[in-house]
Image (tube, rainbow, N blue to C red):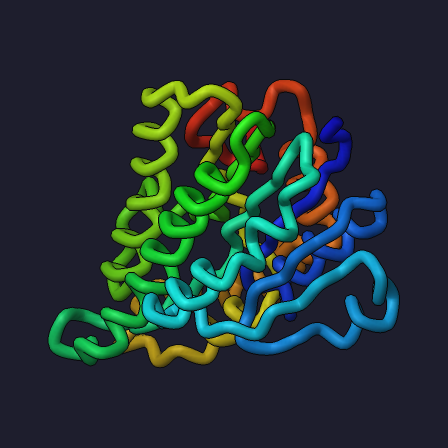
Length: 245
């Protein structure tokens, strides 16, 4: 009989992704982390519960190779409930169209959209008879356009629309939500604050948020996000904002 719960977390090696993985592990939920780098904190604190796989999520060919390896199926084979947290993402490239290198656009779409959609489909196929909870880490930028963020806004909006359509498919055992977590004090925020004003005109807003102490600590956001993910009501809304729950 399948009784266990396991989680797959992308971008688990730092920032919000690492905080999410740590919170899940603290609850006794095994985690398979997918990122370019490993997290020493996870290795030290949960050596037996956490499996870390180094993979470039922005490389679809590498993703396909890994998905064909059977590691995903092996990890979830005994699960009654599988959690997929598509957290990995990038805000780059920032700037208007003439400032965006096409290769950077391709990498952003691969990381922010292609990888999450591939993993969602793969998890569904690998877990017949199990419950699947898929959480896309979205953004307020998915719902409001910002100058300089056309790629980021478009890719996060794609996750929102994916969740809406998957919910309409009403696949048995699948719950999904594209969830905006708020403004978190991570390396991405530091990169935003370091972006020149001529590339990102709203930079001052983020400088002010940081100076006023309005950024949320990753651990605090992760605790709220994981509780949301594990709640009986998860999947009731295909698109939601953690700040309004």
